[in-house]
Image (cartoon, rainbow, N blue to C red; front, side, top):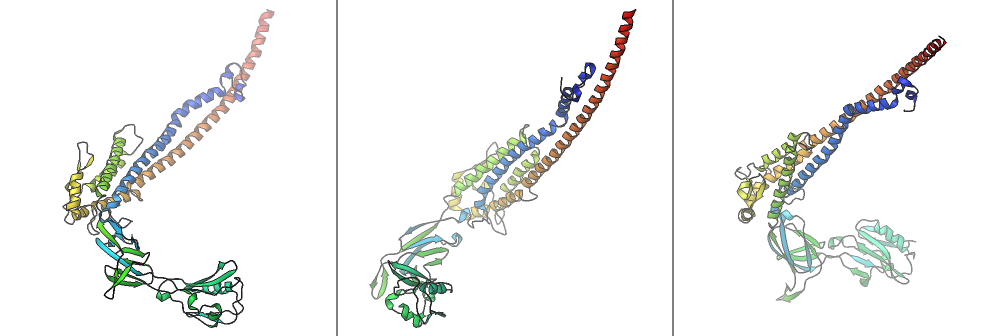
Length: 453
């Protein structure tokens, strides 16, 4: 018998106890709360399944991006370049791959750009007083009266176009080192004033580097620039050292140099297209499986089928300036099961013989977008507010919120009902106990009367 107010009765009242109420509550919970809990659990499973579909859409999107006209990297699959280089006097980098022109470029470096650098005579400490007088550097004038070398260095550094430091160059010796911030003759430091003599900056042996421009020839064209880098046709050229040269008939003839040969690189196109086909088939297979599986946790199967419908609508459309191109013209097709196939032989032939047509089909132009550009926009729209994927996620979240509220309400109702029933059982038990007690006294009187007779 259960403890508590419902366990006080004896006889018939004993059957109205907490154990009976618990059994009744459990039975009713199975028909009211449990179904809602099952739906909430199903939504959790549905979220997991839908996340897998979203992941496949994202994977497919990554394979589409190289064929998008507005690719964030700025270079589509049809604009890839490769290069071979010789020599070590310069290094090459693609500042703008799109601007790179195919062909060989030869570079010769005749002079490296450098800063203007001065050093002072040695002193014993950073705190040595410079002395009276003024120091002029270009248009700037510095009063050195009662200033230490370090204080002067700090004042110079605070000015634009120059910097200074006090460097320890020996056990007990320091020098004030003054440098232009940038290289090139335009950044030359013109030093003068009484203090320049005190510091020893007027000595030629203390003018450690003279500002000069880089001098180079690129395919015979002469350049004189203030830094050791220049950009020609999208190619960033950085000078590392001066090339060797000899004088021939009064002219400089280079005996060393560097070169780069830029060529169109379509070697990855077939691989990129195969990735496109593979990820498309994986996405279609997953959606088909969830669409026809009666045990799938996906509730709105029409929405996920619509994902594939939108993709297929773009995939099998017509593209090109004259809308006369389709994927079927360039090696893509369908097998008996509807999976996308790539005929690499036919596709590679198109890469070699009709790259412009292939680019027109997949990339297109701003006026006539290609398949890749259109498909990228379609997949992006699915994820944005109002798109299929976004709406489905919102729907699941809304259903989960509603079900959670319904579950709370159902549990509250159930608890209230059986709390009331417990009170009623308690009252009934008390009445039954009273009746049984009264009947017990009457029975005793009857028994006594009978025994006296």
